[in-house]
Length: 99
Image 1 (cartoon, rainbow, N blue to C red):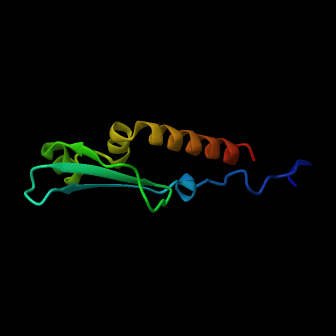
Image 2 (image 1 turned 180 degrees about the vertical axis):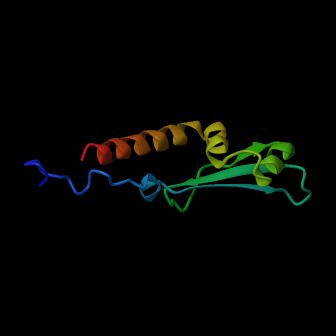
Image 3 (image 1 turned 30 degrees about the horizontal axis):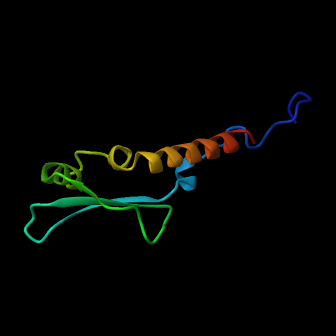
């Protein structure tokens, strides 16, 4: 208590939202000749993953070289899944901030 007011011990608490993040993995792979490429994604630790999407070799190499962020990549090739992901993260953020 300070000046008759109750002090909230959690008032300056910083919430690490990454702790509440949803796992998402993106990968690229090539055919045996290295000409055809695909990307595949897994969300929330699901074993099966999303269907593979054929992509250009240039895009695959850009992703491998970290020239495209994982979230941008997933948004481009898996927009519905990323929409669900973004809504879930926002809902979690709102719930945490409302306490």
